[in-house]
Length: 427
Image (cartoon, rainbow, N blue to C red; front, top):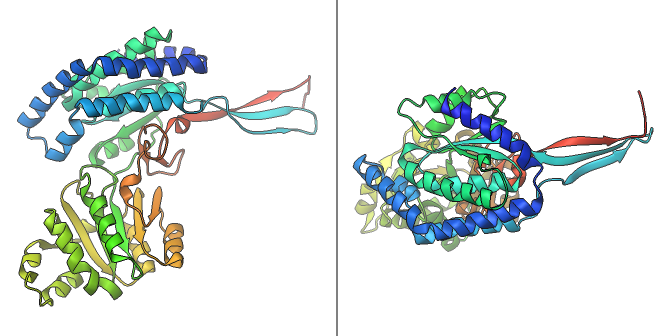
């Protein structure tokens, strides 16, 4: 039996015990895990340092190195997230609905664990603790498979969390970690572990997510890539729009909720775009612009016109749908809110989209018309995050519509079953 199937089988056995564990036991394990991670911080950081050395030698990009890196502050944040999850309401045993039939049969729909949740992810060691915490909070066992670049970091975090399970009187087998292999045979085994894995969640780049969605025989929740847009409406406050744009694009570039495209109404393009482009180019952002934007900049009589033009490249059709995860952005002039909505619904990935406008009508039209997991009016797309949304952490941001959408916390890792109580009724 392959390592992936063996460990999925161990998790399946532990899931039955975990589903019946008390709320107090699960919360105790989360608090223990947070404490142990703090106590083991030096060991985890040393393991992460070994990962970073290999990453640099392999030529990993700086944004991905940033995702991989753990320091004392990030270790503290990981532990704090587990404490936050422990304080959240229990997602299990919630009565979703209930009724009594005419024959007296009493029916309740209640929340229960999914069972075994598998996660395949890339060089993001924090996902190890987030996935463990949210699965434990929701009574699920988990099988984790991180990328080889974060191997040492993930194994160190798993050791701390498994020790916490034992300390709290819960089965250590409720957390499994599948080691990576060069041929990715274990990935294929996990994708095909029907009967052992109840749902699989990929988290990473577009290639990883596509491979999992296309190759899985088990149910998959697709966590999406983020081709996110900032749309500046003609009624926008320019200073507010520039601040939102720069935060969404440059606050952290290698994340899925960073802005990758700027849309600007034609009515304000000449007034707004030069300053917005100066802001972007000043932050070393390369702008992939449409013909109208280039023509507008070429017509300027400003002294820095030539400097602006040097920072522009002509956009291609592929740029409108591209997730750069880099200091790059596509820029397009649109005729108004309807064209902006049409553009986003065509090229967006259903992640996070934003309008900047002082017009209530334009904002409401955008909020209702854009098809995405999170739609903002006058705020940065960078807020799309489970911790920011009060979920403690997230196991991913779902861009599909079944069975969860948007940042996924513990409640998204539950399903329901019906409990029917009778007194001898027959049909």
